[in-house]
Image (cartoon, rainbow, N blue to C red; front, side, top):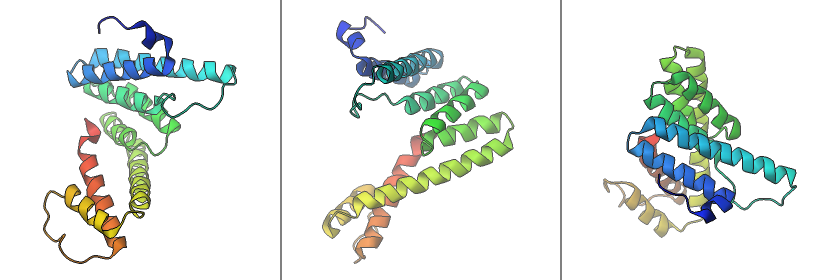
Length: 194
């Protein structure tokens, strides 16, 4: 990447996001080695920022100021998988899951890495974690959707399903919530391993 603007370097959170965005672009361009380097910068910057903030006894960070270190580890794991560096990928998945046990992508990437390493026990544990994460995500999604009206739910269901067959029938609100949550979750599962 070209020059980093001075204001990005001044703002720790912006620098973390910039490193992550740069890494994602390199990953998308199949430049996995460079992506690993930039994910590592994002992780280091996030950890440095957290240490500094803790030492300063700073007030709670707003969500836009907090680095998503878990995602940085999970994304770096994806790059390590592409480089066939399975041990490092598994290590990063474990770090991501230590930060956020419901990080589904880290769990699924951990499954892939542990299978490549022949660590079946670890694979089984990662599958269990991925199932728990999916279940938590579905419950959260259902909780958020339950506040919507039946009309809004029907509209969301039509949007979430490419095949509108069967959506014209009268459904209970609880069933609509479940179907919308499942349909949205199904759409979100395809890109998990890549």
